[in-house]
Image (spheres, one colour):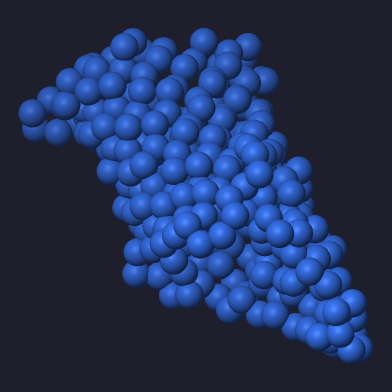
Length: 289
């Protein structure tokens, strides 16, 4: 096991938990590139080993949207913050075929701006809803004929969101005089990742992902327009429709020691139904102490 050091792949969460009293700090910087849009952001995992088999933490997010066909974000903003707890169920032992497995619970808080955006829709960095995500994470090691180690992770998750009040221009495509509610659909995600230890310090990684988002319903009233374009309130119902997408995220890891390393990778989403293809270069530093 000591023949390889790891940062972890770009996307798949670890099934391990931290020893009690230890911290993990892993900031990501990324740019989600899609037609006419660059969404720059940071996402930082701050985890703490609270007890044997149990880690807790939080994940703050910041972002800035640069648009090619409209006004960009007015400034860097705060996105939705996630609280996390993970309990390890089993732990891998060399020579045995039981993987490390863990159950993970996340609660995402609506701290990011999402409505009343006025003439700056790009300021929208949140969802406005409380979202609960339940995940099962697993991790396994394989020794190859050349003596090097292949590490595999397989994670699945389901996210459930509550209703949110929406007023005016929002991330859900509503207009200036809208007033109503939104109910995002459930979101499913699966990630199979592989990490091949070229040497003790160098690792090649690859995530293969599938995501599915159920229909999001936005319902309410388009209120009277002072300019007279809408002479009386009109009922509105907006359905996003379900969407799905596949993704690949190749990456390279370099580890200065067993405690600190850096990852460089790019996520590509494609082949989606009602979704936009994206390319997301990213860099991350993983530090455990």
